[in-house]
Amino acid sequence: MDGVQPSPLEKQDLIEKSEAFRIRGRDKRGRKILRIVGKFFSGRFEIEAVVNYLEERIYTRLSKKAFCVVYVHTDITWADNFPGFSALRAIFDSIPPLVRENLAAFHFVHPGLQSRLFLATFGRLLFGGWLYWKLRYVSRLDQLWEQVRRTEIEIPEFVYDQDDDLGRHPVIDYGLESDHPRAYGALVMADSTTIPAFSLRCIS
Image 1 (cartoon, rainbow, N blue to C red):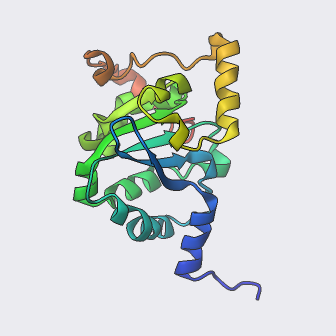
Image 2 (tube, rainbow, N blue to C red):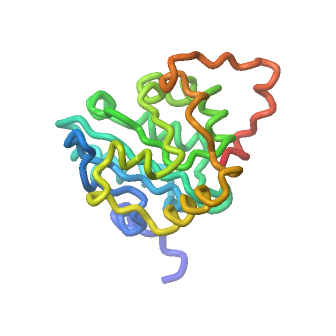
Image 3 (tube, rainbow, N blue to C red):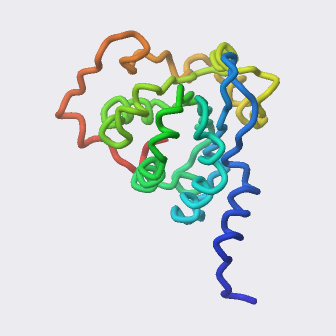
């Protein structure tokens, strides 16, 4: 019937079918991988439903041993699949302490320049030091294969296409991880006069 809202279980099933979140494969240290594909994360998903889905179907499988996250940021657009930072903050705040403790690394694949600058400036404030210091920028897939068993994780074809474009046109490469203090041991001193220039709606 038109106008009938899906039940909580049906909402979780929709999220499951999107394959935005999937636990599959292991990294080269034998740790489970939670793969998150941002492009599959529909902006139509209710954050409450996402939180419930994660609590019931994901977190329970990550509470016993160390694991890592591979987050694919390729082709993220605000209108279609970016939930906003307030929603992301709500999701991160819902992560149980034991799961936070077990998170060993957060691999951020294909970060845009604006997202890198934003996280360097506001990452610790929005998401907490427990996540920020585990963040690893992955500009190219070859860098990911140094940490993750390539044959055990499914990466969508459009991610490979983007990676190929970066190889053919290095001028549009996302660059090295020099803006992240963990990568090179140097703290980034943000100019306070530039902070208002960042918009929560233009991070890509």
